[in-house]
Image (cartoon, rainbow, N blue to C red; front, side):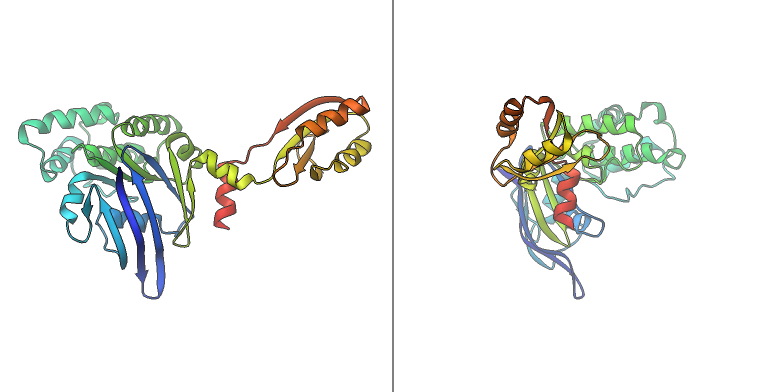
Length: 308
């Protein structure tokens, strides 16, 4: 069952389209990474899903409720951490979370328990008695996560949730998001591609307001790779080896590898593999094949390819 359905969504500012006729679904319990260059339309899309901003055109359905008819019902079911993480910095952490719990309609007899739970889950125990303006950016981000989760929403929309966190904190928040993803639907944006790959079941890439890629990181890498790339190290006269490799029916291109002396990069022709022909070539010529390794396309390469 789809938890979020976006249909032909468009947002215009004057003549400029920040979001241009996009459609996608997010299933219940799915963790989706939302990627794109600055200004691509990520935050605008997230604001429209949360009913923080109205679309120019198109439809949004969240947990079965239509955004244009029942925005209040949608807001009850969403926890939202905006990119700029607006906080009342003159409030103490506990007071702020109490305020958030009350405006989310949490029963008074449940408020203290929920505050303790969020302080524990978000790692705020050592800072719990401080005012927000006394916290580092990383701890302020944790407070933002706590307010997004305090009412136990079905859906979490997290815009740059690890912004300002140190590497240890990023690992902790990554674990937290993966745990939350077992029970909740999560959409998160991030500029840290390795983070998205480690955390998300699926990745959406937006560029110039349009969805340009949609799939698991493995699927996107395979789609981008197209032609097989193999790194080989063969003992012998390199000029003869290069010429023989280029003579194979499956090989399109052979180049020297940067920063790897003695290694050649072999690019196969579309939809064929050169692994067995290279091995057989070495056997025929009595060359020692020291190494043969397939090179996998990185998510960074996919991102550059679809956004350039």
